[in-house]
Amino acid sequence: MEVDNAWPGNILWTDEAHFHLQGSVNTQNCRIWARENPSEMQPLPFCSHKVTVWFTTSFIVGLFFFEAIGPSGPVTCTVNGTRYESLLRNQLIPALQQLGCMDSTIFMQDSAPSHIETPVKQLLNLHFGNDRIGSRHFPTTRSPHPNPCDFWLWGYLIDVVYGGPIANFAELKNRITQHIHNITTETLRFVVEHAVLCFQLIGENGGQHIEHFVSKSKPTSFS
Image (cartoon, rainbow, N blue to C red; front, side, top):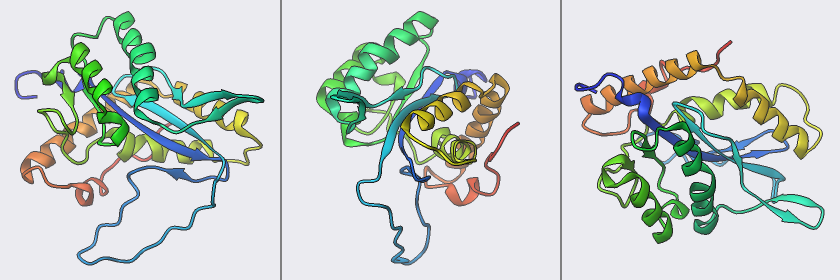
């Protein structure tokens, strides 16, 4: 960032989350920070009906649902290495090539097991190289935890998607898609600027967790 002010805009932050029909969103950002184990429990319905969404921020490339075709239509499926590699190979990478930003994009992902299986790592290395990948099992390990998907996107979607009753999966998917497409370029610019503040905090705190600082100033909603 000291060399190129525009560099953060090249980072493609990625993440997935489960949107449950009954109104909850399961993300890896559900954490409690405390000096002692709070023994906190969060009850969730067993086998709750849900859709799994994979998304990017900084600049929007697609909105991808992890689904398989069942006898009566699309069915939410588990995110495994094979499906994740297929999504990257067949959807994300062609989209970046079409936008003409393949050579400048810095790819960021979390440490989910499906993200670091051997075929996935080989594909990412082929198209991004080690110097443009931020992930566990790569030379540039992503520092915790400035991902805009976590500190902004999922919370924003919870507010707008579940603003009223949802009758079925089709309506849930339509709402998610509609509200993501309504995100403006100005909003994404603001999100990137906030990510830069996170980078600075990480540097000032020796690469440690910074959520207790970020929560005081994180963006929550936009018009």
